[in-house]
Length: 131
Image 1 (tube, rainbow, N blue to C red):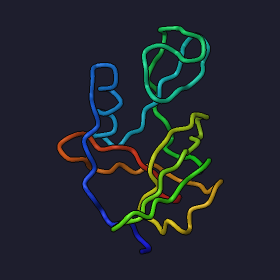
Image 2 (image 1 turned 90 degrees about the horizontal axis):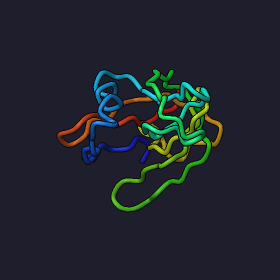
Image 3 (image 1 turned 90 degrees about the vertical axis):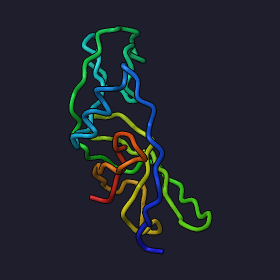
């Protein structure tokens, strides 16, 4: 199968801490957190910096561009799908899906860009497709 068929995606949990991330996703923008104390970006968004422990974190918009760091293709019936770690241009690595492509053509180091896929009754989720 060359192109991933669409299947329902469950809605992600949204809480006050992550609401800005999901609101931006609904607007087609990918946000990251950056620490104002040590300047390190991080993902998954959280209030406390995982590098220095500061609570001075702020939202920043990501370019949505990255490269495949690692991936795995799952060939369960009926639709194969790919899960990957993508390293964004900003330096953070996030776990995601690679979509809208031939899963057999995915390669480590491949450039990708963010796309937002609808969910069942919630905000869209960021996934990636070959750039």
